[in-house]
Image (cartoon, rainbow, N blue to C red):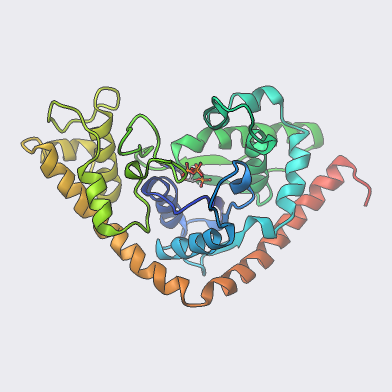
Length: 326
Ligand code: AQP
């Protein structure tokens, strides 16, 4: 059985973008692949944050994974920082990654833009991500389109290491959602919807009040021509709502354009809001059940025990290939 690995950072309550771009894929493929799903808490400290409770966020993210349909019986679920091999292998991979290629990462450029001081961890983030993936011989990595470049650099590092030391790593493939969707911010649809975004109105979080979600969608930025047509460049706001609707209903863009050809933006927004609220309401109900059930620690204990066995074996193989004394 092929293997899938993916993780989200506990940098805040996950967004509709994270859900559509990553979590729905994880759920969809959990029967097809042996999968490792983790909370990327080591990644979460690359950008300093205020009012940030890492422990709480971690537990909440696990409860959300479960509430969204990730089945602990089918997946190995664990917390990254509990497995020291991620950071250990990351160092080895850093010594096989180049400054130039890391400097070209879009996310690094975006997050460091205009800042005088940013951490070295922000720069080497893609190498830690490569370590996460390569430790488990993952064949596929479900990600949103925004993270595709990071899977590509993991591939380059794996190939480089294999060429230098002999075949050690599986070269992973990114798995992008069917629509290839990047969900945009509702206020500024030229930006991606992000957990750490400062403008709360642009972001739908899975634990937001349902009425607030409805309001955010009704107020989403659109354009002035009132035609429901997909055009990312000229009509980014309405295209974003079409993407959201398409991802949650499975309807194609063409079907949606036909369905709403005589409707105005208000009517369309209301339908989108109904679909989003309906989906999130079900998740929220399950979320609170999981959070208060006491099951999370059990799942994590089992998960980390299993994850460490795979990771240790791979890291030992790497040490042998390099010739570290043991
Ligand atoms: N807007 C988005 N549309 C589609 N997919 C998205 N993803 C993130 N935003 C969108 C996908 O969700 C996963 C989250 O990965 P992450 O938590 O490691 O961090 P990220 O990609 O940096 O996500 P955020 O929400 O933007 O977090 P912050 O604000 O902390 O940086 C990935 O698979 C990503 O592709």
